[in-house]
Length: 126
Image (cartoon, rainbow, N blue to C red; front, side, top):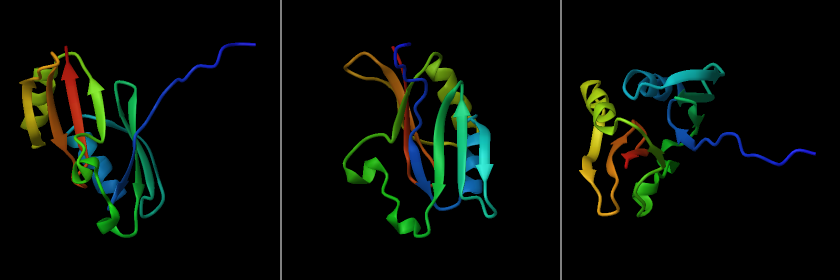
């Protein structure tokens, strides 16, 4: 019998418009739309470099509560190589930069962006 192994993880974001949000992740954040279902779209998976985020339509967008609104910082955080290059590319495409890149006291150079539904993605290197 083989050992159990976790293979992939994906944050699950409620969104007001799945198709619009998936397009934003593709066009602005550089993700690929792996899967989209429904008409209108009800669910999608977007990914970049094998790391995924799931998007799910909610009927009442007022119920979307990103972590930042609850006192948190990010809804997802990615450790990356080339953080400055990544930030520059997203900024060029019109991403809303929440902060950075800044060198944190814990030694990571990081920045964060906000998507159209208010979810914050952090990216750090170091």
